[in-house]
Image (cartoon, rainbow, N blue to C red):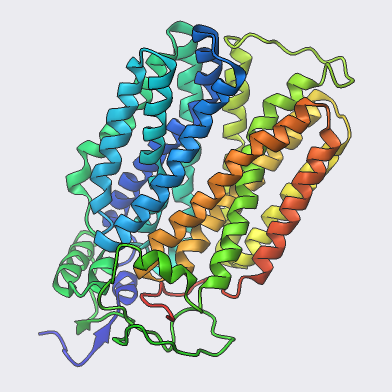
Length: 482
């Protein structure tokens, strides 16, 4: 019989149960969703030129296809984050999969440009779910293994990007862009079909007072992993003092002492408002600026990979670039650039649990700066490609670490909302970048754009330094200072 006098938390239960078969299943399901999201984002690299050619739309209309997806994504990350924090991690999975798969397939039958833009915007809402799946998987991983496994988890994004480039290489040459849209929706249908097998987060259930349900899932984890849970009673690390301002010491390393428990959410916006509580507002704003700068740089590097090369001939060199969208070198370039992210993930995996989140982020961002700096002067096409691939590799490594760090900082009550909103702010960087950076490159202002990127990267480094928390090896928090 269990010792009722002893108490243990979800983190202690997960540590006892270990990382085993149960987590591998959660890992595979959440990874499939991220894989599908990456395919739907990367498809923007290929369908824009094809639509412009087939329907004769203007360059601004072509750009709008990407903009509406990012705009929908902004809505999606906020919507799914709120739904997840207020009604359960699993609640949103069904809606996410239905929208992404159904509307993704439907967009392949678009009869005109307006319908295509509308449907792709809705798909953007569906694929704003990445932070939800990431936070859900995070809540099943023992504290000591979170850094490494979250980096491994990020490979699903890279694999989705690589697969989409390979698929486009085959489909766009042999068939057309509508077939690419249809085939790219298949992974989202797989997420939908497997929905019923996904368990709810025991951490979320425990925080909501559904302790029996949480214990049942923890029992299943231990059973499948062939381990045992601690004896005693499962408890949350939060106390029961709602809406009370507590003054913690300034040097508190994590949000885990003098905590309060919010027993009832006052509205659907409670989890969002908590981001601006006295203990979180500084960190929230710094994370927003970090994600904006990192996304501005990352998506800018992706766009510049083709733009820098294509503008060399008119900006002073004699390089020759093929203009044909069906040239296989286009797909090969995207394929190799996506493949280049893997070494960045390996480096992130090596240092994230050793150096800590903040130092790892700083190292990655400085390496991006070093790769970008030589581009201030005209270089050979090969050197440009190598520097941009290196910059993308480290930028993706930094983005991966930021995506680990952010949900670790926020408490369970607002974890997916906090991570989702930070990601959505990052998407603004992706939206602004084509209007600013790529325009400068096209106008032969290569030095100016490199100075801009360098300033953004250094600003992101300063933001990391000012974040007051380090989460290396720490348990996830269930509570927050009000």
